[in-house]
Length: 133
Image (cartoon, rainbow, N blue to C red):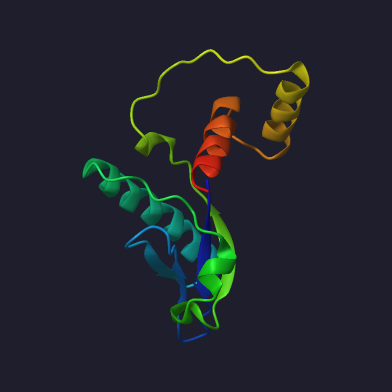
């Protein structure tokens, strides 16, 4: 799942800050963007684990354009953080689906070209995106 992140650019005296607005408490910083980005992935997983442990619903990503209009994020840069949320959605179940061959080949091509974990991950993300609307 791709979550929007807002970036507060640092300078030689200030760290780079990253927030994941859709994941409560997912705020971090680093001396470089790369360090802050790695820390953002880590804190996102920590906070999602906490949410799942409490039995709350895992938050889905908002549209970036809706977040950008929020005054608390004024003058910040924006990016995307790819987070595998499947470990926080509960026990997996095997299902049998029937799809046209063309659709399967398109999914498999997308999975290969975009370094997606698996066909199942793709279908989970697509379903959650559709359900979140």
